[in-house]
Amino acid sequence: MELELRDVVALTKSVVDNFDIENDKNAHSRIMEGLARMQQVRDATIRHLQDDLHKLSRQHTALDAQLRHLADAQKEADHASRNTKLDTLKFRTAKAASDAEAETERLASQAADLAARLEELDLEGVEGRLIHGQGSMTGGAARAMGDVVDDEVLLRLKIYRTLGIEIERDDDSGEWRRAVVRNDDKGDVHVVNMDKKFSRFFYANYFWKTL
Image (cartoon, rainbow, N blue to C red; front, side):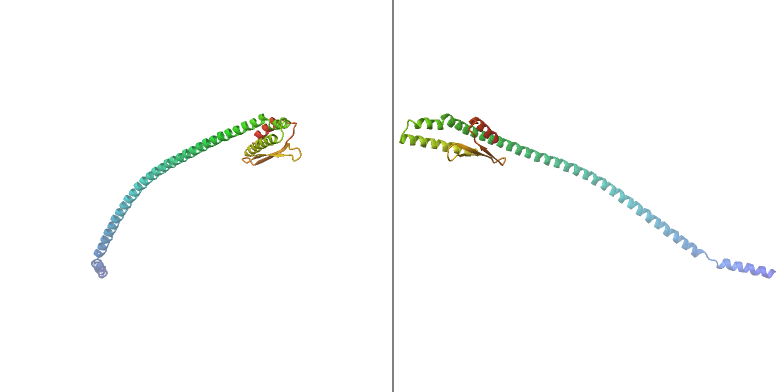
């Protein structure tokens, strides 16, 4: 029994003497130091990333403000350009209206002159003077009167054509039998059969309305 106890004590002492944990302690210390260094690196990396994030956030804010400023400036530029275009269009429209008004006045004046000339020819009574004058004229005088009448008729026809009116005579009677009225602006063509039961004023008024 005593022998066995001594053996156990010896075995225990041998185990204790041979159980060296110094290497394990050193390894544990190295591991802890490595973990500490890794934590430091991790913390430094996180701080660096946070600084970069804050910097990017500030840059984003600055760029966003710059973008809004550029957008507002572009809107103002577009508005100014649109106003300039509208002013140009307004000026061109006013000029076109002024030119059209001047042309209308010119045409109205020309039409009034032509109408006055026609009225003058009507008052002269070309046909009447021819009828009353031929009774007392012979030879050269009658021919001279006929030439005057022809000239006045040609002038009247020329004025009619200037207004866009073509007058046709009856080959047998020599009376005006038909008028063709053209309106180039509207693209209209009106054919009017002349009838003695209607006055010259009626036809003149109708022609002016058609033109």
